[in-house]
Length: 538
Image (cartoon, rainbow, N blue to C red; front, top):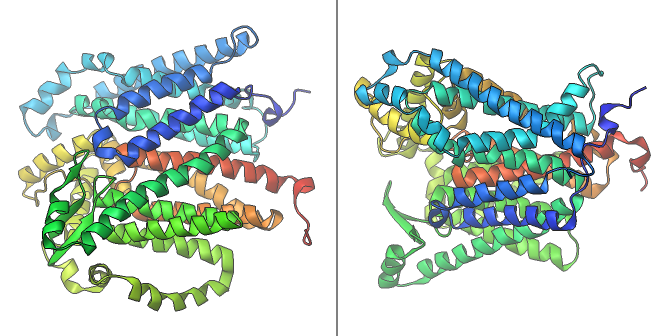
């Protein structure tokens, strides 16, 4: 009898040099996220070169694994070619004339198809299929097997959901009335995220050292970056008027150190080093949660170092004055502490007065604004502008429910601005939906949103299954499950009011998801193994 598919060896382990190359690529990409503004022009090139290196690292040996290499080349090549041709054929069937805002939109549709083949997009589609090919081959072999719940089977289904979602993005890209905008941004968004994610969930699972090294190094890189931001914030707060003006005007790497605005009065927001207060807030929030997880798992002096770094992250989060990140942090901490402490988590509410006293006046104003009626009435309120963005996105979804208006947030910005002028809706420069679900549905239609939902449900279903079985695992591993639940909840709450899955923050979020999935798959194996489960007294 042929062995079950989950017992079949799919790949050789990463050799030492390949392991360090893979780790170096991911750490280099993390460094470009930290200096986001300066890295924007050359980060895609670095990522493309990194993907090429990972493809070489991930290549089976022609001498020892010639059959595996031939199968993989065939699946990757045919998959990339056929999926691209199918996406182009479907896109050509879509009639976009009624949605055209001006002549340029229609003219671009017919004149810019050939530019796709001179763009990096075809190579990145091929790279996505190259990293997905082992999952496709395993799925074909297991097609007649009973539906398995092994970690390998769950990982395979998760990868195939991602492949289907990426394919539909390709359909929406070619169906767009401005395909040039779509495939110009594709190599900087899904074209990067999908292959990197697929590589990591398969190879880091086979090479645990790769995951452990990244988990040791990355949080401290993130904490060090936020320490630099905290130094700038303290210099601004403690400086006199002339010094504050100088810091406010100073730029490093084309990034303002602080940004001054007139929103409901005088306030300032820290931008350094991420380049924007929203990015600063999201990054600080995630770093705080990840360091809290590290503090729970480490002992001795390392625990106190993690706690100190977490306080730095909370301080820079406060200086960003980003309400969406505040709410996401609260959601993540609530999920984490309820799973950790159960009903005893209610005692943590006694810490709220201390947190309130630790806030500055501006931070308190930001929190109180959430219950202020003017926040939901004033045209200058960011909440009111978000509601306008949501209404416009919902209108675009109603008019383009199947294929959307076309992929890429840049296309959405320019199309939404022109469309708002045409229909008499409020016009905002560089407008996006400020909600990832609405943005996805507007760009790629309801099928694209449903595929993203299915991919997200796969991650949540594994998280919830592990929560139910976490008593079988040691205390440290239970803390890991609870921490990942909190991180995932925080990301999803932030997605309701902003877009953390594009460009630099997209690389960060997708990287966290990849590391999370490798941890969850390992914990699922341990939870399913009765022999490896700890006893009640151990």
